[in-house]
Length: 192
Image 1 (tube, helix red, strand yellow):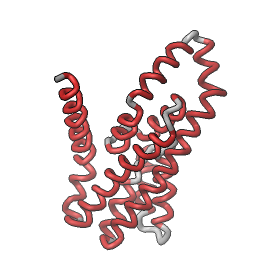
Image 2 (tube, helix red, strand yellow):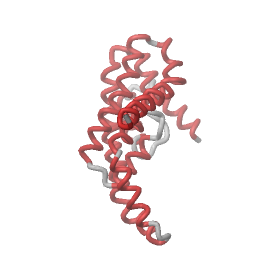
Image 3 (cartoon, rainbow, N blue to C red):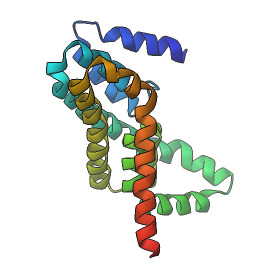
Image 4 (cartoon, rainbow, N blue to C red):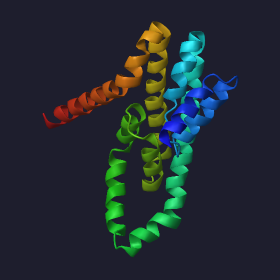
């Protein structure tokens, strides 16, 4: 099923309304859809490098809007579905402790999930569920998704098709390593 969704998403890049398709995919991926918008962005930018920044901008705006839907899902549906389940199993207190810990580092969680291959939708829903400050969530999402989409667009704009394999196979790993180094650096400074 995931392969079929992936192939369908790739085919959208050739559609005359590809920019609208990208908006829908970026929106849905931030809350429910399993395929990242990069899959659609890459062939679109390779086909029209002069539109790289517009394509990245559309992905950014609709990804953040979709993140707000994920936040809403976590905030509203958790109260009606998730909380009664925690109460039934006697885990309401554990849930409250998790929410407090998550919110202590919530901006970092959103930033990390926004640039790494970690499913962004998980963090958007958790952010709503834990009641992470909405302005912190929005700013973190804009920074993270902006970095991710504009770096991909910039690499494709500058280097074209030869960089495609690197982006598809290794860019997620590079983002993850850079994030680990950044977080490790902050932790080291804090310990010193």
